[in-house]
Structures are given as C-alpha cells and as structure tokens.
Length: 323
Image 1 (cartoon, one colour):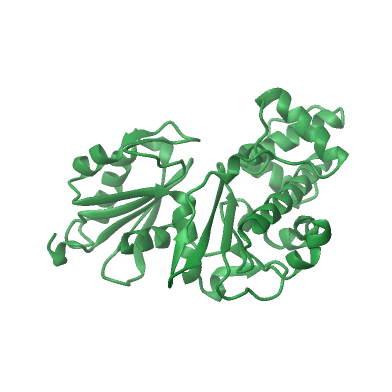
Image 2 (tube, one colour):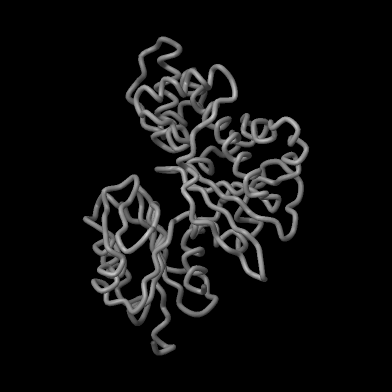
C-alpha cells in the first residue's frame, strides 16, 4: 500500500447501543471528527460507517482506506455476531464493501486496554489506592450495555492486550442478601454472570430483585431512571439496587486485580460509572474491592481509576493499527 494512502485512518468503537467513529489524520496524531451514532438506526456497520463518512462532507480530505474497529463481542474469526445487539457481519465482506485495503476488528475492551497507557491524568479519576507499580499488569472493566473486561500484560518493551470475556464469569455473593438477589435473578436468567448485575440491564435486574425481596411492585424504570432516582434519594429500592451494583463491581474488580496481578492499576470504563459522579467514590465499591481477607493489604495499595476520557476506545483502535 502506498504510504500516502495509510492516512487518514477510520477508527471505530461499536457497543451494544452506540457506534462511535473518528479519524486519525497522520502518524501519532490525535483522533478527530469524532461522532457517535445510534446502532439501532442502521442495519449494520457498513451503513453506519457510510453515514459517518458522508456527514464529514469532505472535511477529512481523501477517503480512508484503512481502519480498525473495536466491537463489543468476541472476535474469533471472520464472522462477527454481536452479543448485545442484532448486528452480524463478515469482516472480509465489510472491508470489501467499504473499499478498504485493510480493516482490523478486535474486541472493544481489548481496544480500550490498548488506550490505557496513553491516558492523561486529566482523563482519569482515582478512587483509592496509592501509586501504580511500574511494569505491572493493568486491568480494565466497564459496565455499559454489557460488561467488558480486559487487561494489559507488560513484556519485551511492549504491552500485550487480553482478548477475554471476563464479563461472563459467574457472579459471586459476599453475603446472604447478595445470595438472595442472585437467586432471584437466576430464576429469570439461569446462569448469573457478572454482566447480569453489572450492566444497564444488570442494574434493572438488581432493582427487580430488590423490589421482590422487599415485597414491593417494581416500577417500569430504565437503568438511567433507577440510577437517577437513587442519586436523588427518591426511591429506597433504587438506592439499594445502586448500592449493590457498586458493591458487586468492587468484588468483580478485585477478583480481576488479583487474577492479573494488576498492581499497575485497575481502570473502570463503560458508560455507567462515570455518570455516577461523586456518589461512586463514597459508595461501598472501594471497601468491597479490598475485602479479600489476607490480601487486603495487597489490594489497599492498588489504585483504581475511573476513565473520564471521551473517546478512549478510539485511541485504542489506533494503537491496534500501529501493531
């Protein structure tokens, strides 16, 4: 491929609700022309990408012929089937459809993991812990439409991202109340993965379970309405559901930290936690994070960061192309 055709690059971060796109205009350049589109408005990624490029109206100069997409699902081969959205597509067919010379598709949290070393201090908020240990693994997880999980492993002068599906590990209970909540959710879903509680629908599952245990009728509330009512302290069931959400997240985050040895830090992405604002640092998240018996002291030093950067998945997609 001619060098002049490798830029601009198309970058994408496709979740279960929104598809975010941007361009990178030159080597090492910042992302630009970022825009978020609703996945539900398009039949598939090709239509969404064409709409994005059309809306640029020539602002990018020449049309990109190379790109990378982070997608919220396992990427195990050419055929991609999204976990929390109806889109199904072939990577090779999408590349040909768009007229691209190269199209790289990876898991969205693998892309987010690749962005972690580039985050500025202003693009993350620390929630407890001390200082990261240089050269140690990093962990990342994030509740949104689903629960994404990944990490970065250091070695030989470069980072290696993990392409895993940790959001689907079995959700553990730390006390009898949580066990009762999980039992209620299990009657509806069968296996109760971490995602069944730590996602938008997961918050709704927790709210329904809390209402059932409190012998009250659940209202028809969206996840955003549940968290909003909890933050305004307008609904006791919403308050309890959000408290359990943060506690469960602390348990799952510390399990990940211990599994990866992530003394370099644990990062929280996704669309839910950043929206909780000042509530989250004061929640039971951090106490549950360190509540690991003999390993409490080990976890007390591990910093946790809430990612506040607007488009980190797109930065990670660019890093994936750099290889």
